[in-house]
Length: 138
Image (cartoon, rainbow, N blue to C red; front, side):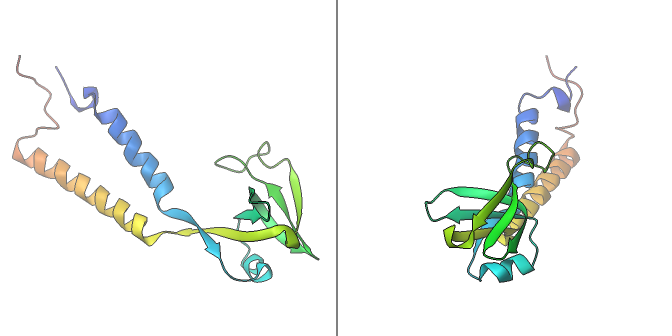
């Protein structure tokens, strides 16, 4: 007997769909506004490109006098381990600032792909139960 879960292509397909959904809706966008205005919006996470072209990510950053301060961020979620190093960066050392925002193109693409997958599952199930078949022809 064979069912949908024993299909060799299903696991990689599910992993691909889930990972693309987790990453696809947000992207880094360069801000062209002054740093004090960006920090007034209190973004949780920012990416800073320094004048030497190196990049760092700061969590809960804020401006104090002529410096940008925040926790150096590495990883996918803030943890005590990923936030243990505090950074102070002079505003003169900052070349570009990036904030995370919703990317409408990839968001639309991902939503439409989910709709298409659901429609395909429905159609193949209605046409003959191909995906939900538990028997095979030997």
